[in-house]
Amino acid sequence: MKKLLIFGLLGLLLLGGGGGAYWWFMLRDAGEEAAEAEPPPQDPPVFLELDSLTIPVIRSGSIVKYVLLKITLEVEDQGARDEVVDRMPRLKDAFLRDLHDYFASIPLDSPVNVRTVKQRLQRVADRQAGPGVVKDVLIQGAFEKRS
Figure 1 (tube, rainbow, N blue to C red):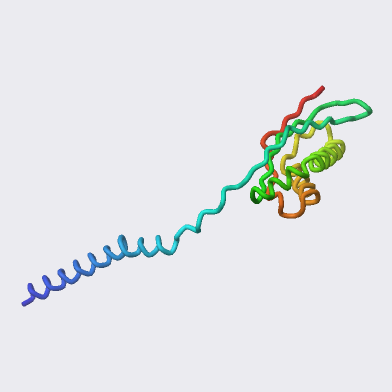
Figure 2 (figure 1 turned 60 degrees about the horizontal axis):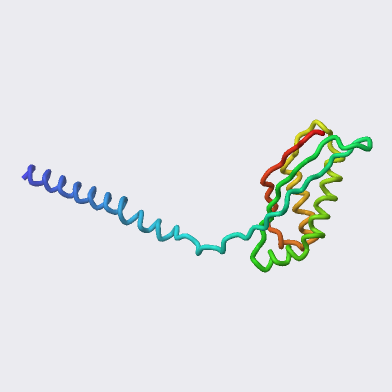
């Protein structure tokens, strides 16, 4: 009788362990996968690559260095891209004016602070094209050349 009880308990233990393992490895993962369903794919971002901007840094009436920036704008969609292209002359002029003022005010030996330049260009883009038209200003490259 004792042996039968022990074998019965071992059988229940094996069935319980097998059922628990099945739930843990099979059913639990399926429930998590359904809960973590990916959101529907968004439209791919639209980029507008600008010509390189060359900003002369002038001190005491002479050019001491040039700063070359390669900039790409991320816009909402193709309609916003067309809107930015229509406003491109004013936008580039505003970029150059703002960057000329910025680089004239920082010390000559300091490197280009990409984060500050990016924030300034984003503010200029919001002023010129309207808030939210340009989602992000991407600086692809920043180079300095002493003259």
